[in-house]
Amino acid sequence: YAIGFKSGSTWAVRSKLFKGFISSGCSVTTFDLKTDEVLLFEGFIDFLTYLTIKGSSNLNCSVIVMNSASFVQHAIKWIESRSKIKKIFYFRDNDQAGLKTLDIIKNNLNNVSVIDQSDKYKPYKDLNEAYIKCKNLNL
Image (cartoon, rainbow, N blue to C red; front, side):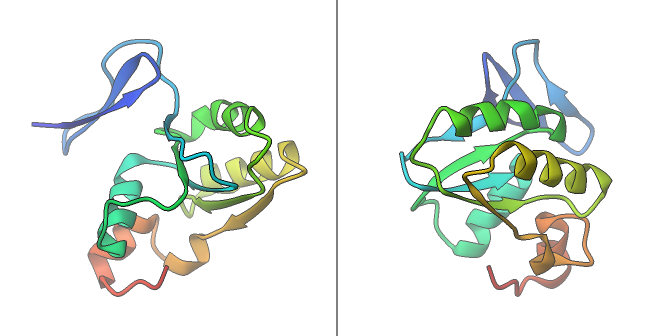
């Protein structure tokens, strides 16, 4: 069993045994509510964890799930195509890839405020791991 999420023209698939894409054509997953603020997640499980913490699947702003840090340029392109966006809350992994993508985003989106959310779940690898270990996160 696995869970799948639309990613470009294919699907991102996650399970205990597999993390990948069904075919080529993968990209970021977006929920465009046309807001000036965006929640940005490195992975889909962290997005689902965020919804669990909030206790609701109702979104009050747009969301981008990169599905992989390697899709950071796809996320940047999507944000650049929406001039209304002024603020990004980035739920990155606490690792080198997360730091690198944070720098890339900040360096490419000069007119957008990027707020790193990872301090809220340090010392854990990501939001999901923090939730599993301590449950009482304040986001």
